[in-house]
Image (tube, rainbow, N blue to C red; front, side, top):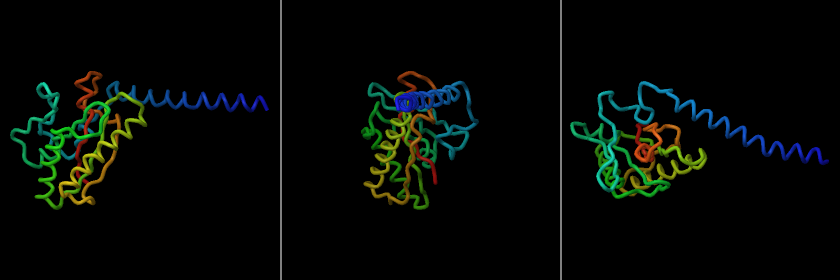
Length: 183
C-alpha cells in the first residue's frame, strides 16, 4: 500500500516537471532563430507593405506608419495593442477598431479572424486565455459598432507568434496585440 502511494506521489511530481521541460525546450528552439520568409501574423499583406510598428510619444501608443498605404493595407496591418496583463481596449485601440468597422461596413465581403497575442511573460495556458480575452474584446467592440457577428471569428496564439523576438519592454509592448487576418 505504501509503495503505491510513493509511486503515485512520484508520478504527480515528475510528469508536470517533464511537461514543463518539453514546453520550455520548444520555446527555446523557436527563439534560437527558426524563422520563415513571411511573418506569421500578417499572411495576407503584400510583401512591400511597411508594417514595422513604432512606439509612440509619451503615452506609449504603438502605431504603424500608414502613409502611402491603401485602406485595405491599413485594415490588415494596423493592430490593436494592449497594456500589460490587460484585455481592455485603450482609447487608441478603440480608434483602430472604429476604422476597421468602417472598412468592413464598406466591404460586405470581408470576413476576418481576430488573433489574440501576448508577450512571453506568464505561462502558456495563462497567455492563451489572455490572448483569447483580447481577441474577444476586439470582436465585441466591432459587433457593438454594427459588424455582423458571423463576419468575425477569434483565435488565441498566446505567446507563440511574437511580432518581436526581443525580451525588452519595447518588444513585449509590440507582442501584446490583436491582429486581423482574412477568413
